[in-house]
Length: 379
Image (cartoon, rainbow, N blue to C red; front, side, top):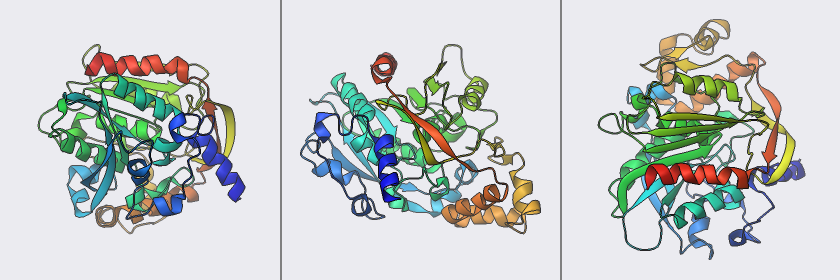
Protein backbone atom coordinates (compact mmCIF):
# COMPACT_ATOMS: atom_id res chain seq x y z
CA UNK A 1 0.00 0.00 0.00
CA UNK A 2 2.78 2.48 0.85
CA UNK A 3 4.37 1.78 -2.53
CA UNK A 4 1.08 2.46 -4.32
CA UNK A 5 0.58 5.76 -2.47
CA UNK A 6 4.14 6.83 -3.26
CA UNK A 7 3.60 6.10 -6.96
CA UNK A 8 0.40 8.17 -6.96
CA UNK A 9 2.04 11.13 -5.24
CA UNK A 10 4.86 10.99 -7.77
CA UNK A 11 2.36 11.06 -10.65
CA UNK A 12 0.25 13.81 -9.08
CA UNK A 13 3.04 16.14 -8.03
CA UNK A 14 5.69 15.76 -10.69
CA UNK A 15 6.59 15.54 -14.29
CA UNK A 16 9.99 13.99 -14.92
CA UNK A 17 10.54 13.57 -11.20
CA UNK A 18 12.39 16.65 -9.89
CA UNK A 19 12.78 17.59 -13.55
CA UNK A 20 13.51 21.26 -12.88
CA UNK A 21 16.99 21.97 -11.60
CA UNK A 22 15.87 23.87 -8.50
CA UNK A 23 14.46 20.72 -6.91
CA UNK A 24 16.88 18.03 -8.07
CA UNK A 25 17.36 15.54 -5.25
CA UNK A 26 14.75 17.14 -3.01
CA UNK A 27 13.69 14.98 -0.08
CA UNK A 28 10.99 15.78 2.43
CA UNK A 29 9.17 13.96 5.22
CA UNK A 30 5.72 15.50 4.75
CA UNK A 31 4.49 14.10 8.07
CA UNK A 32 7.02 16.38 9.78
CA UNK A 33 6.92 19.31 7.36
CA UNK A 34 3.12 19.61 7.18
CA UNK A 35 1.44 19.87 10.58
CA UNK A 36 -1.06 22.18 12.25
CA UNK A 37 1.87 24.24 13.51
CA UNK A 38 4.12 23.99 10.47
CA UNK A 39 3.47 24.67 6.80
CA UNK A 40 5.15 22.74 4.02
CA UNK A 41 6.02 26.17 2.60
CA UNK A 42 8.63 26.48 5.37
CA UNK A 43 10.69 24.18 3.20
CA UNK A 44 10.83 26.80 0.44
CA UNK A 45 12.10 29.46 2.82
CA UNK A 46 14.98 27.24 3.96
CA UNK A 47 15.94 25.36 0.80
CA UNK A 48 19.02 26.92 -0.81
CA UNK A 49 17.30 27.01 -4.21
CA UNK A 50 14.30 29.00 -2.97
CA UNK A 51 15.17 31.06 0.10
CA UNK A 52 16.60 33.98 -1.86
CA UNK A 53 13.60 34.09 -4.20
CA UNK A 54 10.87 34.74 -1.67
CA UNK A 55 9.81 34.76 1.93
CA UNK A 56 7.11 33.35 4.17
CA UNK A 57 4.16 35.52 5.05
CA UNK A 58 1.88 34.55 7.93
CA UNK A 59 -1.61 36.02 7.87
CA UNK A 60 -4.90 35.59 9.67
CA UNK A 61 -7.75 33.69 8.04
CA UNK A 62 -10.78 31.62 9.02
CA UNK A 63 -12.27 28.16 8.56
CA UNK A 64 -15.82 28.05 7.23
CA UNK A 65 -18.20 25.38 6.04
CA UNK A 66 -19.61 26.88 2.82
CA UNK A 67 -20.64 30.12 1.11
CA UNK A 68 -23.58 30.58 3.50
CA UNK A 69 -21.31 30.65 6.56
CA UNK A 70 -19.28 33.37 4.86
CA UNK A 71 -22.40 35.38 4.00
CA UNK A 72 -23.74 35.25 7.55
CA UNK A 73 -20.31 35.79 9.12
CA UNK A 74 -20.22 32.50 11.06
CA UNK A 75 -16.83 31.63 9.56
CA UNK A 76 -15.28 34.33 11.74
CA UNK A 77 -15.88 32.10 14.78
CA UNK A 78 -12.96 29.96 13.63
CA UNK A 79 -9.79 32.03 13.16
CA UNK A 80 -6.64 30.31 11.92
CA UNK A 81 -3.15 31.37 10.91
CA UNK A 82 -2.26 30.60 7.29
CA UNK A 83 1.14 30.56 5.59
CA UNK A 84 1.97 31.98 2.18
CA UNK A 85 5.22 32.19 0.24
CA UNK A 86 5.64 35.47 -1.63
CA UNK A 87 8.14 35.89 -4.46
CA UNK A 88 8.62 39.24 -6.18
CA UNK A 89 10.68 40.20 -9.23
CA UNK A 90 14.12 41.67 -8.59
CA UNK A 91 14.26 45.38 -7.95
CA UNK A 92 12.10 47.78 -6.00
CA UNK A 93 9.40 48.73 -8.49
CA UNK A 94 5.72 48.14 -7.81
CA UNK A 95 4.36 45.02 -9.53
CA UNK A 96 1.16 43.01 -9.99
CA UNK A 97 0.85 39.78 -8.00
CA UNK A 98 -0.76 36.42 -8.82
CA UNK A 99 -2.16 34.44 -5.87
CA UNK A 100 -1.79 30.72 -6.63
CA UNK A 101 -3.80 28.10 -4.69
CA UNK A 102 -3.13 24.39 -4.77
CA UNK A 103 -5.11 21.33 -5.81
CA UNK A 104 -6.31 18.50 -3.56
CA UNK A 105 -2.76 17.18 -3.82
CA UNK A 106 -1.88 19.83 -1.25
CA UNK A 107 0.95 22.36 -0.89
CA UNK A 108 3.51 19.80 -2.04
CA UNK A 109 2.54 20.70 -5.61
CA UNK A 110 4.42 23.98 -5.23
CA UNK A 111 7.60 22.06 -4.48
CA UNK A 112 7.42 19.06 -6.78
CA UNK A 113 5.22 20.06 -9.70
CA UNK A 114 7.18 21.06 -12.80
CA UNK A 115 4.31 23.03 -14.31
CA UNK A 116 3.90 25.15 -11.19
CA UNK A 117 7.62 25.81 -11.01
CA UNK A 118 7.98 26.93 -14.62
CA UNK A 119 4.80 29.01 -14.53
CA UNK A 120 6.03 30.71 -11.37
CA UNK A 121 9.47 31.41 -12.84
CA UNK A 122 8.00 32.74 -16.08
CA UNK A 123 5.69 35.12 -14.21
CA UNK A 124 8.62 36.46 -12.19
CA UNK A 125 10.68 36.92 -15.35
CA UNK A 126 7.86 39.01 -16.83
CA UNK A 127 7.73 41.26 -13.77
CA UNK A 128 4.76 39.63 -12.03
CA UNK A 129 4.94 38.53 -8.39
CA UNK A 130 3.60 35.18 -7.17
CA UNK A 131 2.19 34.16 -3.80
CA UNK A 132 1.61 30.49 -3.00
CA UNK A 133 -0.87 29.70 -0.21
CA UNK A 134 -0.95 26.57 1.96
CA UNK A 135 -4.65 25.89 2.59
CA UNK A 136 -4.20 22.49 4.24
CA UNK A 137 -1.39 22.02 6.77
CA UNK A 138 -2.72 24.33 9.49
CA UNK A 139 -6.11 22.62 9.08
CA UNK A 140 -4.60 19.21 9.79
CA UNK A 141 -4.48 17.83 6.24
CA UNK A 142 -1.63 17.15 3.83
CA UNK A 143 -3.90 16.28 0.90
CA UNK A 144 -7.57 15.60 0.18
CA UNK A 145 -7.51 13.60 -3.06
CA UNK A 146 -8.31 10.36 -1.22
CA UNK A 147 -10.90 11.98 1.05
CA UNK A 148 -12.32 15.35 0.03
CA UNK A 149 -14.13 15.68 3.37
CA UNK A 150 -10.90 16.59 5.18
CA UNK A 151 -11.10 20.32 4.39
CA UNK A 152 -14.27 22.17 3.28
CA UNK A 153 -13.77 23.49 -0.24
CA UNK A 154 -14.62 27.12 0.52
CA UNK A 155 -11.54 27.65 2.68
CA UNK A 156 -9.07 28.00 -0.16
CA UNK A 157 -11.06 31.00 -1.38
CA UNK A 158 -11.34 32.49 2.12
CA UNK A 159 -7.55 32.25 2.49
CA UNK A 160 -7.00 33.88 -0.91
CA UNK A 161 -9.25 36.82 -0.02
CA UNK A 162 -7.47 37.33 3.29
CA UNK A 163 -4.12 37.18 1.48
CA UNK A 164 -5.38 39.73 -1.05
CA UNK A 165 -6.28 42.13 1.75
CA UNK A 166 -2.75 41.80 3.15
CA UNK A 167 -1.05 42.21 -0.24
CA UNK A 168 -3.06 45.30 -1.17
CA UNK A 169 -1.01 47.24 1.37
CA UNK A 170 2.34 45.63 0.45
CA UNK A 171 4.86 48.36 -0.46
CA UNK A 172 5.65 46.69 -3.80
CA UNK A 173 2.08 46.01 -4.89
CA UNK A 174 0.83 48.16 -7.76
CA UNK A 175 -2.77 47.26 -6.93
CA UNK A 176 -3.32 44.73 -9.72
CA UNK A 177 -3.93 41.08 -8.83
CA UNK A 178 -4.49 37.76 -10.53
CA UNK A 179 -5.31 34.29 -9.27
CA UNK A 180 -5.04 30.77 -10.64
CA UNK A 181 -5.07 27.12 -9.63
CA UNK A 182 -5.84 23.63 -10.88
CA UNK A 183 -8.67 21.36 -9.68
CA UNK A 184 -9.39 22.56 -6.10
CA UNK A 185 -7.28 25.57 -6.97
CA UNK A 186 -9.47 26.11 -10.03
CA UNK A 187 -12.57 25.96 -7.84
CA UNK A 188 -11.01 28.57 -5.54
CA UNK A 189 -10.57 30.80 -8.60
CA UNK A 190 -14.25 30.44 -9.51
CA UNK A 191 -15.31 31.40 -5.97
CA UNK A 192 -12.97 34.39 -6.26
CA UNK A 193 -14.62 35.55 -9.48
CA UNK A 194 -18.01 35.94 -7.79
CA UNK A 195 -18.99 39.45 -6.73
CA UNK A 196 -21.42 38.13 -4.08
CA UNK A 197 -18.43 36.44 -2.43
CA UNK A 198 -15.65 39.01 -2.87
CA UNK A 199 -17.86 41.91 -1.75
CA UNK A 200 -18.01 40.28 1.69
CA UNK A 201 -14.28 41.01 2.05
CA UNK A 202 -13.76 44.09 -0.14
CA UNK A 203 -15.67 47.31 -0.66
CA UNK A 204 -17.59 47.55 -3.90
CA UNK A 205 -17.91 45.21 -6.86
CA UNK A 206 -14.30 44.89 -7.95
CA UNK A 207 -11.97 42.01 -7.18
CA UNK A 208 -9.12 40.26 -8.97
CA UNK A 209 -8.11 41.75 -12.31
CA UNK A 210 -7.25 38.42 -13.97
CA UNK A 211 -8.60 34.99 -13.01
CA UNK A 212 -7.55 31.72 -14.65
CA UNK A 213 -9.28 28.66 -13.17
CA UNK A 214 -8.27 25.21 -14.43
CA UNK A 215 -10.22 21.94 -14.20
CA UNK A 216 -12.51 22.85 -11.29
CA UNK A 217 -15.18 20.59 -9.76
CA UNK A 218 -18.40 22.53 -10.35
CA UNK A 219 -21.24 20.05 -9.82
CA UNK A 220 -21.04 19.72 -6.03
CA UNK A 221 -19.04 22.78 -5.02
CA UNK A 222 -21.93 24.91 -3.80
CA UNK A 223 -21.42 27.59 -6.45
CA UNK A 224 -24.06 30.28 -6.92
CA UNK A 225 -26.86 29.26 -9.28
CA UNK A 226 -26.97 32.91 -10.43
CA UNK A 227 -23.27 33.79 -10.64
CA UNK A 228 -22.03 37.30 -11.36
CA UNK A 229 -18.48 38.32 -12.24
CA UNK A 230 -16.60 41.04 -10.39
CA UNK A 231 -16.78 44.15 -12.54
CA UNK A 232 -13.05 44.68 -13.22
CA UNK A 233 -12.21 41.05 -14.00
CA UNK A 234 -11.09 39.17 -17.09
CA UNK A 235 -11.68 35.44 -16.70
CA UNK A 236 -10.22 32.61 -18.79
CA UNK A 237 -11.67 29.22 -17.89
CA UNK A 238 -9.68 26.17 -19.08
CA UNK A 239 -10.63 22.49 -18.75
CA UNK A 240 -9.60 19.26 -20.41
CA UNK A 241 -12.34 17.80 -22.57
CA UNK A 242 -11.27 14.24 -21.68
CA UNK A 243 -11.03 15.00 -17.93
CA UNK A 244 -12.75 12.16 -16.02
CA UNK A 245 -11.75 13.51 -12.57
CA UNK A 246 -13.60 16.84 -12.70
CA UNK A 247 -16.04 16.89 -15.61
CA UNK A 248 -15.75 19.81 -18.01
CA UNK A 249 -19.45 20.03 -18.88
CA UNK A 250 -20.56 21.18 -15.41
CA UNK A 251 -18.00 23.98 -15.32
CA UNK A 252 -18.68 25.03 -18.89
CA UNK A 253 -22.38 25.32 -18.03
CA UNK A 254 -21.59 27.29 -14.86
CA UNK A 255 -19.22 29.74 -16.53
CA UNK A 256 -21.74 30.35 -19.32
CA UNK A 257 -24.27 31.32 -16.62
CA UNK A 258 -22.00 33.99 -15.13
CA UNK A 259 -23.45 37.46 -15.56
CA UNK A 260 -20.74 39.61 -17.13
CA UNK A 261 -20.07 42.26 -19.74
CA UNK A 262 -19.16 41.15 -23.28
CA UNK A 263 -15.49 40.25 -23.56
CA UNK A 264 -14.94 39.61 -19.85
CA UNK A 265 -15.05 35.80 -20.09
CA UNK A 266 -13.44 33.21 -22.35
CA UNK A 267 -13.96 29.44 -22.08
CA UNK A 268 -11.45 26.99 -23.56
CA UNK A 269 -12.24 23.26 -23.37
CA UNK A 270 -9.16 21.41 -24.61
CA UNK A 271 -10.16 18.45 -26.78
CA UNK A 272 -8.57 15.20 -25.57
CA UNK A 273 -6.79 16.71 -22.56
CA UNK A 274 -7.03 14.97 -19.17
CA UNK A 275 -6.75 16.27 -15.60
CA UNK A 276 -3.24 17.60 -14.84
CA UNK A 277 -2.72 17.97 -18.60
CA UNK A 278 0.51 19.88 -18.00
CA UNK A 279 2.13 17.32 -15.66
CA UNK A 280 4.69 16.14 -18.22
CA UNK A 281 3.77 12.46 -17.81
CA UNK A 282 1.62 10.24 -19.99
CA UNK A 283 -2.01 9.95 -18.78
CA UNK A 284 -2.28 7.18 -16.19
CA UNK A 285 -5.11 5.53 -14.29
CA UNK A 286 -5.16 6.40 -10.59
CA UNK A 287 -7.44 4.04 -8.68
CA UNK A 288 -7.68 5.76 -5.30
CA UNK A 289 -8.83 9.29 -6.21
CA UNK A 290 -12.35 10.16 -5.00
CA UNK A 291 -14.95 11.35 -7.56
CA UNK A 292 -18.60 12.48 -7.30
CA UNK A 293 -20.04 12.04 -10.80
CA UNK A 294 -23.12 10.10 -9.62
CA UNK A 295 -23.80 12.34 -6.61
CA UNK A 296 -26.55 15.00 -6.55
CA UNK A 297 -25.70 18.53 -7.71
CA UNK A 298 -25.22 21.22 -5.07
CA UNK A 299 -25.73 24.91 -5.88
CA UNK A 300 -26.75 27.81 -3.66
CA UNK A 301 -29.10 30.76 -4.00
CA UNK A 302 -28.02 34.37 -3.51
CA UNK A 303 -28.21 33.97 0.30
CA UNK A 304 -26.08 30.82 0.24
CA UNK A 305 -28.94 28.38 0.89
CA UNK A 306 -28.53 24.96 -0.71
CA UNK A 307 -30.51 24.20 -3.84
CA UNK A 308 -31.02 20.53 -4.65
CA UNK A 309 -31.88 17.22 -2.94
CA UNK A 310 -29.15 17.27 -0.28
CA UNK A 311 -31.36 18.94 2.33
CA UNK A 312 -33.99 16.23 2.03
CA UNK A 313 -31.34 13.50 2.16
CA UNK A 314 -29.67 14.95 5.26
CA UNK A 315 -32.84 15.63 7.26
CA UNK A 316 -35.51 13.21 6.07
CA UNK A 317 -33.97 10.18 4.40
CA UNK A 318 -30.84 9.58 6.50
CA UNK A 319 -31.62 11.78 9.52
CA UNK A 320 -28.03 13.00 9.88
CA UNK A 321 -29.55 15.95 11.77
CA UNK A 322 -32.99 16.19 13.46
CA UNK A 323 -33.82 19.48 11.69
CA UNK A 324 -32.48 22.00 9.24
CA UNK A 325 -31.92 24.41 12.10
CA UNK A 326 -29.70 21.85 13.83
CA UNK A 327 -27.79 21.23 10.62
CA UNK A 328 -27.17 24.95 10.05
CA UNK A 329 -26.02 25.42 13.64
CA UNK A 330 -23.57 22.54 13.23
CA UNK A 331 -22.09 24.04 10.06
CA UNK A 332 -21.47 27.28 11.94
CA UNK A 333 -20.12 25.82 15.16
CA UNK A 334 -18.05 22.89 13.84
CA UNK A 335 -17.44 23.43 10.12
CA UNK A 336 -14.81 20.74 9.49
CA UNK A 337 -16.48 18.10 11.63
CA UNK A 338 -19.85 18.81 10.02
CA UNK A 339 -18.41 18.81 6.50
CA UNK A 340 -17.04 15.34 7.17
CA UNK A 341 -20.38 14.27 8.62
CA UNK A 342 -22.21 15.37 5.49
CA UNK A 343 -20.14 12.91 3.49
CA UNK A 344 -21.99 10.11 5.27
CA UNK A 345 -24.95 10.96 3.06
CA UNK A 346 -22.88 10.50 -0.07
CA UNK A 347 -21.57 7.17 1.22
CA UNK A 348 -25.10 6.00 2.03
CA UNK A 349 -26.24 7.09 -1.42
CA UNK A 350 -23.37 5.01 -2.84
CA UNK A 351 -22.50 7.79 -5.25
CA UNK A 352 -18.84 8.16 -4.27
CA UNK A 353 -16.53 6.40 -6.69
CA UNK A 354 -12.81 6.04 -7.24
CA UNK A 355 -10.60 5.88 -10.28
CA UNK A 356 -9.50 8.67 -12.61
CA UNK A 357 -7.05 9.44 -15.41
CA UNK A 358 -4.34 12.00 -14.68
CA UNK A 359 -1.54 13.37 -16.82
CA UNK A 360 -0.56 14.92 -20.09
CA UNK A 361 2.38 16.47 -21.93
CA UNK A 362 0.78 19.77 -22.87
CA UNK A 363 2.88 22.13 -20.72
CA UNK A 364 4.80 23.66 -23.62
CA UNK A 365 1.62 23.99 -25.66
CA UNK A 366 -0.35 25.60 -22.84
CA UNK A 367 2.29 27.87 -21.29
CA UNK A 368 2.04 30.68 -23.90
CA UNK A 369 -1.72 30.94 -23.36
CA UNK A 370 -1.25 30.98 -19.57
CA UNK A 371 1.46 33.64 -19.73
CA UNK A 372 -0.24 35.83 -22.34
CA UNK A 373 -3.42 35.96 -20.29
CA UNK A 374 -1.66 37.37 -17.24
CA UNK A 375 0.63 39.65 -19.26
CA UNK A 376 -2.30 41.14 -21.18
CA UNK A 377 -4.43 41.70 -18.09
CA UNK A 378 -1.88 42.60 -15.41
CA UNK A 379 0.93 44.44 -17.15
